[in-house]
Image (cartoon, chains in turn brown, purple):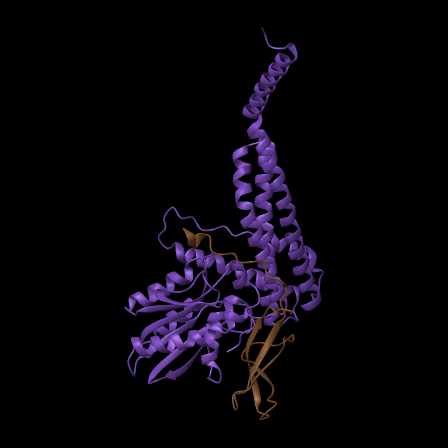
Length: 67
Length: 367
């Protein structure tokens, strides 16, 4: 019965969307604002540490709490 | 000594007033309640209309500006919103699944082909995004029309029972409609949605491997884990599609060279109130939603070969499932892969072949 009425969830505020790039060589993770054309497992930019090609591992919305 | 005349008048007045009040509330209470319900439904109906109009504008805007439609999209989008699907007759349920699949595929193909004709230069991602936005707009249009129908019927008949039933479900309908509308932002920018968790898990295991198209918008890759051969299947991303996993599963299972010993399905699942978003849970069976056609065919294929089916789901609310993926859900990808690995180790032995299916809308998730 409860499965017929699952949680609809809370109304979400406008959340900024981030793209996470992983470097497959040194493991560095870079977090930046989402850009149009980004998609998960696409080749990203250059790793700031080892200059290898990064891969986009995640794209997510995160609520930033202002202190 | 009698009562003072002023006191008697007041008492009589109060008695008469009470009788009138009682009579009015007894005779008119349903009407007063119906009037209150009518006003309440009207306010919510106005909210639904705003959402319906906004989704229509978004669909027209996307087809005109992003897909650079060669013709004015307004009239065509209005026609799309009124498209209906007649479900097959179920008096004789034998073969009903095939008939439902035939009809729903036809509906899907028709909208896709017409969008292509409207914007011949649009790429497959844009077409899938437009199709997703149109689905939202069609759903909101349908919700609005049904609520309006009952509202007018309640107004005409002054039926308290019609109106009060409508009044009771209105908060849920408005919440669901707002959830649908919030999905449009994610669709427009081709960002992954919460439902894309399954494809994200499968995609991660497919990166760098050769992909084989097994069916329209459905791909698989072969990888290895601790001496087991893994077939990993998902919808073809980054388009906003769920693919045809049922056909992929059938083809892979029925290929005598593959000898699949276990099927593992990963999907997003709607949580109950109180459950945590991003919580990973395990179970048995075919983890796939939808109308039931896909589930039926996957269950049939696995049952015919006596293959066990394991399910791993990630809990989320309806809003989370259709809006931009939340951090908690994205971070559940690695936890889910750990569970998949553990299942493979526990339920299979070296030399076995496992089929892993990542179920869900793969918008913004490649492989």
